[in-house]
Image (tube, rainbow, N blue to C red; front, side):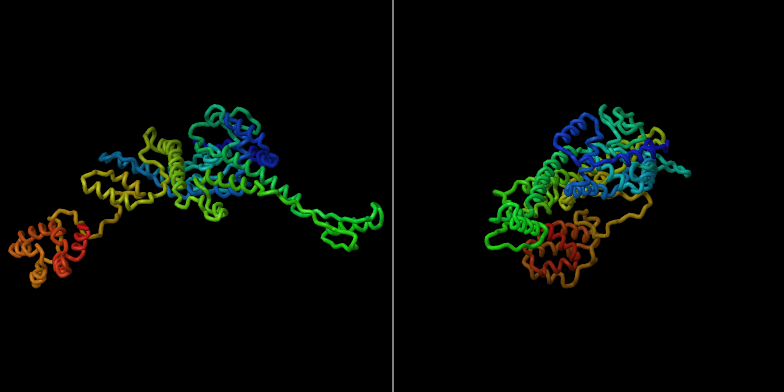
Length: 497
């Protein structure tokens, strides 16, 4: 595995020196031409323009990093595949897991054009998420084997304008101005394919900034009133020049003195009706927020007075985040995990894989109730799938694990019941005699039993207790609490409800 980079220092220096602002004189016609070229695979022009839009527009500058960071902040883990009862495969899966965990815990992510920005797996995921805007994100992989037999890598994020896509796959442009690129070498590049929201974002950007420019020009031209001086003096006379000087002094924030025959007025421009620029720019801000976050931002909706456009429950955002986690996970599972496993184990198929955990389900309580119902009715749920669904992992062999500390369930069989008292209290019969309940007859049967028969009769009574306690008074319930324990009686009475 080679560690030589295709991005030479000379290429970086050339890129830095030749950078320009592609949106300074951007017109709708030019933007349309760039997007048409981008669609057929000539990426540099529009990629540079889109990058500058993401940097300069106030709304894009907020929503784009939020979309990327939402995903990069999710926890990740290495999950072993289900090997069933095959102990040899299970042991091999554990080895695969350890190698992948070391790799991802020790990788480095940086940028080809800014090597001062360095991080780990979290920065790598954030860079991969730029594919949501640009459609593709590319990382050059510099593999780094260690002397002790370990393996990690440096991932160098390369801007999209270093590539072309005319053959349906990214190809690297070896120098500035290249038309045809070179195919990406296997195992040397990580390519992430995302939604590609860039063209739609660029259209909204243009429709927003055109009226903003007009609005700014209007303010610049008519923001301050014009000064009109009226005089009866003949043009060119001393009185005429005195009025001109007075007008100039107003323009320079000065003052003037004129006689009663002369007049100085301020001329202001008043718009007829409501100016359209505000509504149009606000409409485009909403469109940009909806594109990237799934719904309007509450801060934008607050401007309308009621926040009606905001997605307060965040359901749309959860859908996007879940899909982004899957996109990143699948890219690493298909392009990185097999390469790491092959390095250590040859042609073996990976028995473990990287997973970026999606957000937890909102209605976990309902899921737990459904799972409990299925188990009690004989369903055999997969332990691995269930643990993954709740974002948990099973303890390894020999590893300390949590165990249930709660009293035994009321759904257990009678021979596993644990009674807090081994014999009936002396006043038990007297307490039950006060209540006019069918329990009296059952009590006589219970009192007549002894030894193992007593435990059997008591277990039968436990099964019948929910029906027998219907309408029971407090004294009856108190008596059974003394025998079976308050917690068990409460559980049985809750069950009947």
